[in-house]
Image (cartoon, rainbow, N blue to C red; front, side, top):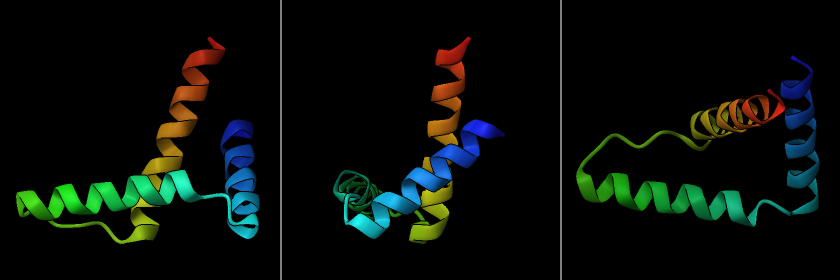
Length: 64
């Protein structure tokens, strides 16, 4: 839970500072690939929730 809260705070800070270029580029690439395959595209907020969850999982795995 602490890791998830920390990830949320850090992403919020990065969004305010305009430091989300890498994540935004990843979302754009995801949209292009999903569109090319004819798949449903997640809204940015939904995609960001998945992005955050993956970050938390990676951090938790590295803490073991």
